[in-house]
Length: 392
Image (cartoon, rainbow, N blue to C red; front, side, top):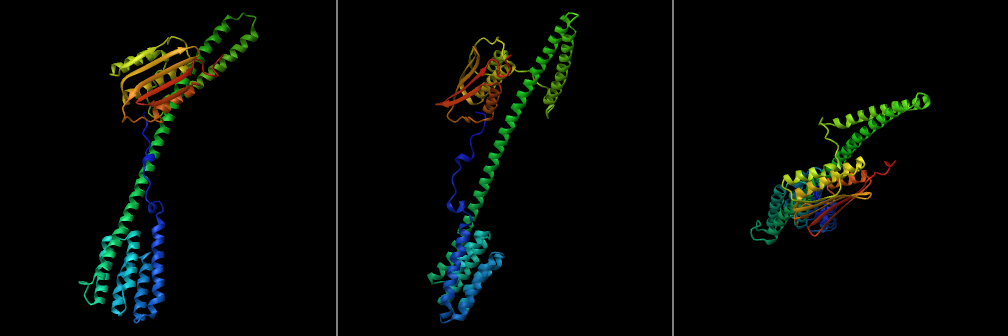
């Protein structure tokens, strides 16, 4: 509930040429090459073969040079049909190469506003002059000019769409990476809070053990010298352990923000927590069992923190009343929170808050289940009264 919904999951698939961006850049030269080869086979045998061959070579040079010098290539492509007309040759093949070359140049980045008019006017003049009408009454001349404009517009549009998809995918990847980093940071912070609680309670328990060892040493008879020595050694070890634990605790409490540590969370504080959220305006129907029973420190802190996060989520994203049940029955502590959510609520079962609750439950040796069905959101945690490994 507290995380952001998946970003990349609803992203549409780009068209084929966007998924394979080099497809058109490889396909267009192949088509141009086939046209040039056809011209080399046929033009030398035309009536004005030498002039037509010269114009064809100029157009070919425009295609080749345009890869590195786009503007120079554009000039040669535009000159090809005009040279063919000046040499008395048919400019049909040259203006076709100019159209395909214009598409390729704009696809690679040349401005369509520049290449379209330059090649379009050159084609219009070359074909129109060859027909003796200056382009005004020859439909082929207008087709030659219009196709150049269309080729430039098409190349520019595909390039723009490709750049848009690349930018969109880049932003999507950045957003996903940012979300994952936020989740990882939240997990690390929650683990640090768990470690703080654990070290707080551990330091207290070590101090209690040291007190009991001291009391046992005092109660020993004067003749129990070996036992007294062992107790003294044990007290020394416990004092060293307590000092190291307090040093670790000091580092954990200091952190990076220098904030004062909060008291260790306890399941006995859950009634006060419920009253606080009620005062904040949340309607809570709470069924609290016997919370006076002694629990292990990990389970006690986990029960409180899970209840706290569940109520916080309900307050932020739910609607109506929250039904809360916290009870200690036999060897299990149960925390269950149920609330209704609206159809537009951002319910994410992998959110940061839920990850924190799962970390809490796992650290205490329990489990957390989350279900969202039909506008009803349920969080249920089952924790052991005594953490595994803590039994004596």
